[in-house]
Length: 365
Image (cartoon, rainbow, N blue to C red; front, side, top):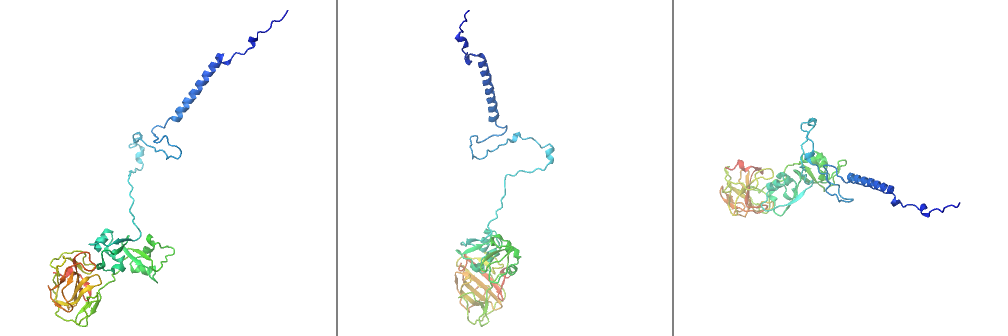
């Protein structure tokens, strides 16, 4: 009995895409991958509640995002146990003190400036202006002159140039401060471990004070009069005359102050006058100075009252008297002006007894 030949189609493999099991498995796998992708997208794309990124597109190197808190979402702890803790008031303002400079500045004197005005402008005493400018002003406010430059200290005190053989103890004592006041001032740049200061060095002396150095030099004329060596207008003759009676009169028609009052470093009063106003002798006496003074007084007249008293009449536009001339209370000595170191018309009037300055307010009627 012969065998039957096999059907070649029976051995042919059936394609996978025609198998239902293939399609079922593919659908299940696709669903699983899709679900996993959706879950990952939800996790990584969501922002935390209450926070916002103001710059979501910022790349590497961009500033850190700003976190904005909503105050309405914060808990109310006013009545909770937190109320027992220390409370602090939030102040959004920060006060930074103005420390200024620790070294001197410069100021150019302007027309109509006065020592008091300059001192007030910089928050200093007028003495500190003088003590910072000894070489220029020589302790005399009459040397203020428009266009000149002043040193302005950052603090009340003095400005001093170190000299040969100076030492900290002696300089500090001369300005009535402790040596540490000089060493510790930062602008002086002094090493506290080795406080050596070279001659010629300028130092600030905070709080430093000293006596005023200038006094008008009283000199004899060889007669009964004495005068003051204040410049070319000094009289050198041997004079005599009628002495004053001791009763004083105002040297001007008006009695208003215009400028400096009497005080340390300013040994007279500045009386308001207009240009060309008559200036009168305050008492009988003899003229011992008539002309220009190179000490800042400008055109100056001095009367020796022959009773140890002298009176000064400064900044005149002109003088109308001569050396040795006898004058009496009310005699015209000259005209008001603004010569010398003056920033505006006024009469600088001084009264001196045995050469020492006296306060006119206690003597004039």
